[in-house]
Image 1: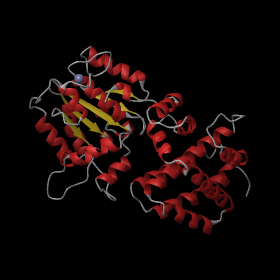
Image 2: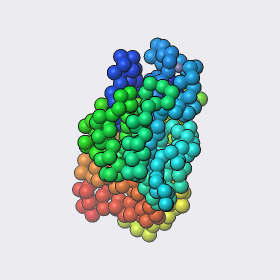
Image 3: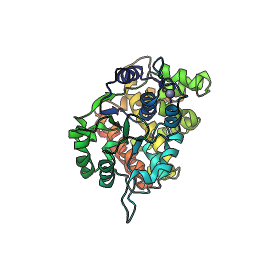
Image 4: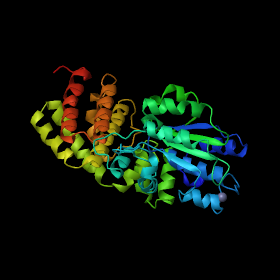
Length: 379
Ligand SMILES: [Zn+2]
């Protein structure tokens, strides 16, 4: 993985290059930002840059043994730490899941947590970084590195550490052994233990400009210019989302239909119809449910914006725009936040494998109240 293979984030790439080039790599680095930005891709480019024996022009060479081992996820001095599910009767550590981990990195480079749940067959269990893991690191850390100067621990989702694990690692992150690096990759840094957070050098990744995503979809992913433009516009700065949109073309129209039906039923408080609709959506499966809720979030945002911009600057299809012309006023400053909260909650519950029929029906019932009462229109 080279920096050039990662879409956007030029400022962060430059900071990372400078740290390595000047031999001032912080012993604990935190890459944070919303899911789908490519934080793990950037981490992999950074790792290759750190270990490469022949860096040039701000990129790893791609040919030296270190580059080859790192790219193939076989560098013996890179240790991956990530949330897992408890194994009965033995210590629960990431190394027992390395096969699954490699599949995750290769197949889902944008690291969607729900994909990880599927790969490790977590069911309804929430993966955690357990104390066993922290103890394992404490035991392993004093040992010298095997092949290279640095020994690196990459911790994916440090927010998933339980309190015991976090407290155990605290001291080590604060005062690590020489040439030992910790790279924390977090979707929700606000949920990381503050004492750990304060000991890291934080680089926050921001949304990628749509033009950069569009160009990348055209030149690297082989999309037509119009497909690339619409996927990039909908992705809200997330290359991971853009790829998802691009690989599910046609779905947006289907979601549009459902969304319009749902809002009409919610406005009229047609509970039986909402129940039917929620069951229809639930039957589509977890992944698609989550994409539908993402669609709802996007519509909320776009419709809210429609109230302020004429002609709209937003990314809506003709059909969506026709609907929004009438619908936009129902999403206003008094209910927009609640609407987003309810949608996020439903998405989170679905991602954690809650019963989709119940979650979707609850979500739709909440809309009945939000759309009417809080819009200030008398019923
Ligand atoms: Zn190299």
